[in-house]
Image 1 (spheres, rainbow, N blue to C red):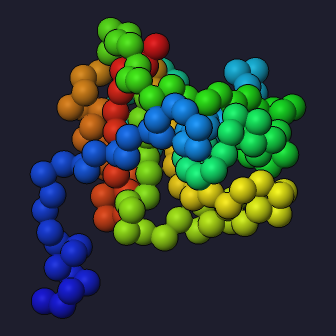
Image 2 (spheres, rainbow, N blue to C red; image 1 turned 90 degrees about the horizontal axis):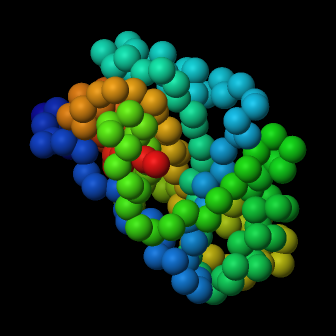
Length: 181
C-alpha cells in the first residue's frame, strides 16, 4: 500500500474535536453569518436531505458561515470587516459568538460546526485575509468553517454518525456537536 491508500483506509475512533472558538477579547473573534429567518435556506435544505439519506430525520436545517479571526483586531475592526466583506446586510445577519458552550435544549436543537483540519490549507480563509488587508485592516489569521443548526429529536450519537457520513469529510474536516439554545 502507498501513503495515499494508507490514509484512506485508516479507521478513526470518531471525529476529531473542533477547534475551540476564539476566546472573547481583543484580537480573537468568532463571527457567524446566517441568512435572515425570512429567507429560504437552499443550503439548509440540501443539508437536511443529506442527513435524511444518512438516516437522520430532521425538521429543519439552517446553514451559516463561520470566520475565526485572530490577530491585532478590535471590535471596531470586526464590525468593519463584517459590514464591508463578510455579510450582505439585506439578506444576512451576523453575531460575534461567545466562547462559552451552548445551553441544553432537550436534544431538539443542535449546532454543528465543521472546520478544515489545521493541516489542510484554507483557501477561503486566505482570500478573506487578503480582502481584509485590501480594506486597510490589520493582517490577521483567518479560518473559515460552516455551522449547521439542526432541529431534530435525536441523540448525540445518532447525529454524530449522520454528520460524519454526510456533512463532514473525516479526511479533511473535524466537527463538533453542541445542544443549542
